[in-house]
Image (cartoon, rainbow, N blue to C red; front, side, top):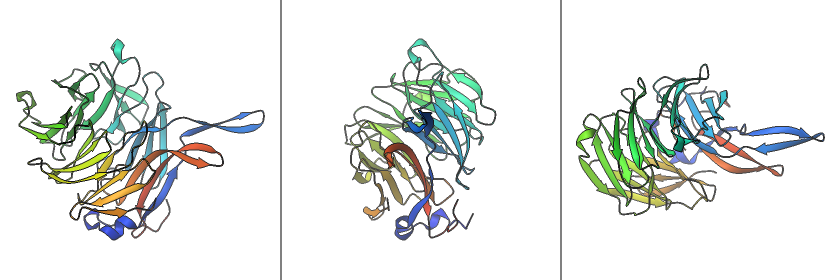
Length: 340
């Protein structure tokens, strides 16, 4: 792989010059009918995550698949199918071959809402029961084996990968979204009315130590902390994106994107915390500079933690009269001339 510039050196020129490095079009199935090749569209990508230290990415899709990718070489490493439980939200554990995946089926009957999976040998290492409706948010602690899940049953549950039993429950109103900060010292939980509550990771049972009001009454669909833990990034159901000061809740800047029917827009920080990147309902990718509050146009989504690279997952690439699911790895052409 060609040299990869430090993410601390990002600037407007690098962001503008980012180009597609690989397109994975494996989210479809071909079959033959009357000697004609047909393609079955298997549905959109539900979620994706990058490992914190390894060059790996994992995705889930509507065909109940979990796929593991090598992002350094642009290769699909493994695909596993989960027809019994389904595959929705997903995130890596500390181990590069283990992931936490939420289920989509039979939740009201007490089925396993969350599963700890080994991608190495396609085994379920542990089941986690408790949620009675779909999990819509997952976050793993960067420092230990804890993770959090937010569900449409109006609860946030705190778990430990080493045991089956739930370690703590936070009851709230509305659709919850959860996120640990990058040091694992605190976590944020959203609730209805644009409210963000901050908890000490060690003393969460004492209640929140601070509460922020966003000012947008729409549901908060995603929360992220910047790597330096100084900023929080919020994406709302009304397709607004806000950057808040993580210490006092002050709004640093806000942006809006076009709506995408039946799809949640997700934004992400660049690793240096200086830019926000987001998809949009019109099919474009957008980037904004936080210090200048200005838009940086991209040619054309989580960011790979250690590389000048991010992934964009979408539905609707038209090829030869049929539609496919596309997933793009986008990286800076300025620093990596080699093809995957």
